[in-house]
Length: 114
Image (cartoon, rainbow, N blue to C red):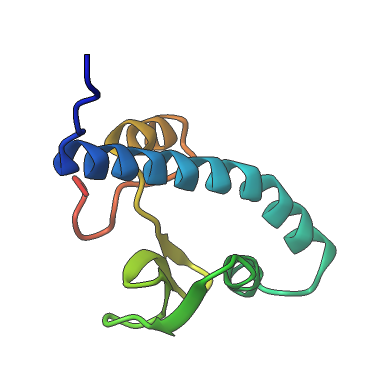
């Protein structure tokens, strides 16, 4: 029996899932370290987050279209900050709902289902 080719759409779907898993793992691993760095320095939480995210390979910073700073990996937005008071970070629905349920995050201020 020969080996059949995997359709490109399946490969793209699998890649998207792995990228989501990677983002979740990076976020979880980083949260504790960010909190510790913030407590041990006089930096604002926004500056602490900015320094950490910009230390990741390939991540760049651009002005966000609604104000604040946006972090990108290539053309993909990873999230953005509005000063020290608001961070818009995309998560898969299951993770977002878990974070909201645990009181660790709020729904998006303008698009609560996003």
